[in-house]
Structures are given as C-alpha cells and as structure tokens.
Length: 507
Image 1: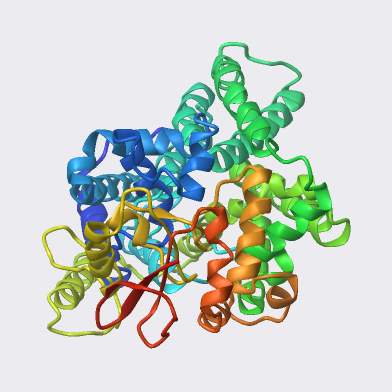
Image 2 (image 1 turned 180 degrees about the vertical axis):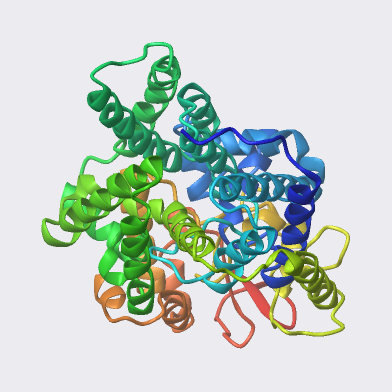
C-alpha cells in the first residue's frame, strides 16, 4: 500500500493556486449560458415557484420534484439574489479542491516538483479537448459534473491508498450531485475490492462499512433516478429512446461519433499506461476494470444496440483514465537513469505559467483568443443576455417563447418560460420523447441530420430561420405565445421587442 504522505505543503498550495490562475487564463470562466441554463433557472424556480409556469423543461422537473438536478440546484438556491457571485466563488473553490486533489494523487507517484507540474499541464492544457465523448476532468463553468469531479478525485486519492471507508463516504456527495460519476466510480472501486478480497480469501468487515453505507444511501438514490428516468412515457419504446438519444446526445453516448483524432491519441496512451502500471496494483486494477467496461459498453451500444447500456455512459470514466495514463508515463520517465536534475526548473516553470497567465488575463498579450472571462466584477453580458433582460421587462409572466437552438441564456436572464431549447435536457423518457418532436419540427433535428455529420446547432439554426409565421403559429395551440428570431428574419406577426440583433414576435 502507498503511504498516506504528508499534510498539504506550501509547495502543493502554490502549485494549486498558480494552476488555477493558468486555467482562468487558458480556458477562462463562463457564466449564464450553455450548460448552466439547466441548473441556474431551476435554482431560480426553487426560490420563486411562480417563475416559468409554461416552461417545458422546468415543468418537467417540477413534475418529478426528486430528480438528478435537485441536489445541485439546492446548493445554488440560497444564493439566488447573488447567483453570479455564488457560481464564481463555488467554481473557484471546487477548482482549487480539484487541483489539490490531483496534486495529492500525483505526489503518490512523482516526487520531482518540475515533473509534477509538467504532468498537470499535460492534461489541463496540452491535451485538453482531446477526449472521448466530450468528457474532460475540468470545466470552465460551475455545473454538476464540475463539482462531482472535484470531489471524485479525492475518492480516487483514498482508493489509491486503500482507504475504503473514506473513499465510499466521499462518493456519497459525488453521487448526489452527479449520479453517473459517483455510480461509475463506486462500481469500479467495488469490483476492485471484491477482486482484492478474493485474492486474500477474506473480507475485512471494518473496511466494508463504507461500502455498506454507500450501498444503502446512494443505492436508493440511484434506483430512484433510474425509476425517474423511465417514468411518464407510454408510447416510446426502448429503440425509440435509443434513437432519440442518438439524435440529441450522440457526442456523449455513442463511440462511433467520437473524433477519430482522439481515438488515435488516447487509445494507445491508455493501453500503454495500463501495461506500464502493473507495479502499481491499485492503478493496474482501476485501468483493467475501466478498460473492460469500455469494451463491453462499446459492443453493447454499437454492435448490439442495447438501450439499457446507455445508462452507464462508460466513456465518462476517461476523465480519470487520461490524467492517470499521463501520470503513469511521467512516473515511468522519473525512474529513467540517469535522469537530468529537473528540480532547479521548478520555480522558473511556475513563474513562467504565472507571468503568461497574468499577461493573458490583463489582455496585454492574447496568446489564446476567444477566452471567456464572465466574472461578476467585469461586464461580460452578451447580446443574447442583454436582449433577454429587455424581453423580461416586456413579456407577460405567463408568456412562453420559442427560441432558436443556439440561444441558451434567454430563460435565465428574461425569467420567462421557453417552449423548447436545444441545451436543456431532463432525462425522463416522456420529456425526451416530446423534446425530440419539438426539436424535429422547429430545428429539423432528426436521425438523418445527425448522421449527416453536419453541426447540429448550426444546421438547426438555419432550418429554424427558414420557417414562416404559419409554421410558428401552429404551436400557439400548445402554449407558445411568442417567437424569438434574429433581426434579419422578418415575420408577418405583431412585433413585441427588438434590438440590433434579435426580434420577438407575438403569435
């Protein structure tokens, strides 16, 4: 077993803080749109249930109050009056926790500070966006997956030290905010525990207490989420669900849609690390179980087209495999003899990261363009956000607006209901079935478009802006009251609001 190591050192703290600054400079921080629309608006509703009375996504969650979004939304709920500050500070805290966790993991295998920093840079910067299924270890906005992985890395740290009770207790909050991440780690760790116990021909019941607690508490939550997911739909069969998921989430769930370049880079990297890590028993077992899961998942989804397999989304485990694979390679390099003394490069390397990060953040240089910095103390609202605020002062509280697929901030900033959007996704079958119908009619998003290989949002936006007033009016009988389009699109309908970019018409 690996030693538990020393307490957090000043060097570890310094590396953590400077890497955080580097992440802000290299990737930025995003707030208010994109994937955040799912939880920000839900937190607003928890604070004021009179909001979004006709919103398709929010009402789908309300109909199943205990749902996967609830724990995370409850974290934001107390701070809705200053939710931009809350998200920024919580994202900063979770990122520092995430970085420190990976520093502690790295210390178990790398003693040289310079090599440790190079390893962190390898997966935080150099190989970022080289992934399978859009899965990265860190995200530049505060979403459930970001918090879950910030906590999950500490469960991984405890696992590598064989601290079984601590790791399973740590997985409880992980599973609460992101059931998929927590359940996957629990399954891998549980299989390894059984594997190890079978070799020792005994089970240490003192070490099994954490597994028991997790199984009872988190198991009930996971079963509840599974029941929630299959609720409400009487017409959608398993294959319908399979095809709906392919249209909306193929980039996450279907390996055949993952970038070929990522396959070429990550497959040999992960396999090489698996072969090299045999001396590290816990790492080797983690890689073995995870890789076997990847193989089984790929066969089940791509060859057998087994809908139930989608619930595992096993390629999310690559958020751990990629950093660990790079760690194994760096650890192998550190054992090469004779290895040049890298220790003297530790401070110059950290200083360089800090200087370039500060130059980027202050815009004195732009070595990376289009980096969002939506921090609450800097004006950052996009044209979409500004128009949504304006619309919120004009539209009635009971209004329900049809929006294009590229619009993601309207609900949050206008505090008005949305008929359908592209980003928001509840995971019960009834919602997915109806959302697919609406997106197919309004955005042209169907299986043919998905399999054509074109950008779904770009094509959907083009399709949307070719619709006529009559096309939009058919949804007035389903509760839609207004339609938002780009200003260049003129509809033969009463104009409600307009600026230099967008227009809203009344149906």
